Image (cartoon, rainbow, N blue to C red; front, side, top):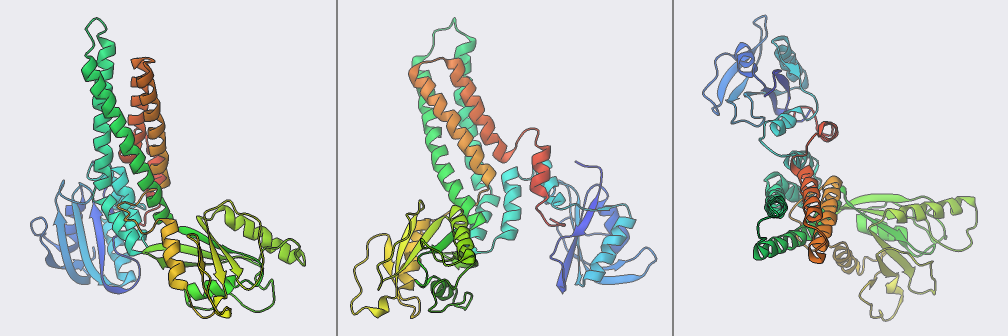
Length: 435
């Protein structure tokens, strides 16, 4: 528990029907009583008049008390529900400060929940991710992480690794005892089982991180192939200038779209050809190559009525054969290509379906992850792979135990890292004030 008491608006800034001011800490209850009188028993709303120190009625609203440890932060918490006027909210916060509270730092309420063991670090991160989610899919995945499903799986794996490590180290500590070969073999199987779990979780976490960050799809191709027309058709609005003049697009133009419940940013780029007409077109092509570096998927758009090629792209690609409405018969497309008419809107459904498949968005994603989770899981996977290899080659149980300890510590960084002051500061600084 902390000694200070904090106060801040817990609802979004701006005008609205209701705003919520949250107070947490040892003085939360007495401060609230000086603001609005006696409180009801915990978890019961009470109508109240909120008064200033000078006895001026500021507002009429509701107040509710959450007694420690049964609160969001694990401390005594009071929430004041007032009318949604920013000036009024500021007055109430100022009154709370004058009575002994201080204004909360960004994410401090959730940080206290973590420090008081109400949630672990992965769940704390999921709070911020749920608030920031831009699509239904991201919101549901963040909620799953917040509910503790991800943490529960990670902690179960840690428990299993601890059990295996204890058995291995016991064999080292008592060398005079006869080693239980059968038990040791079972420990080896347990390590392999957790190796498989970590592999699967890493794959899911990588997808979860992409869903949190959003996918990038870059549209490339020769000049005048219809790239800008395709971007406009996907966005259903005129974002990029289109014309019959080759090289109209000189700079990269991006738009974020909700595709399959996930944010996907499509970027239209300057046309690629061997001999650009001028320095401006050459610079546009340089920016096209820069966009390709960050892409998760590339749409290579060609005019189906022409024989044109661009240099090979070392990325997952879909070949888009545009202007198929100009042909009397549409050719059969392969697995990684689709025939469309961006101008007429033909074949766009097929293209979107293929994009979803290529990005792996047809599969359910049960959790939202961060890059640090991916890094921790990869570190754990490396250590477990080493442990299995050492175990199978009989190169020494002390080395196996060391690798298991390293794997355990890597997983521990996800939910409750040791000596994590810098990490905590970085994570909670992303939160809004009041959360």
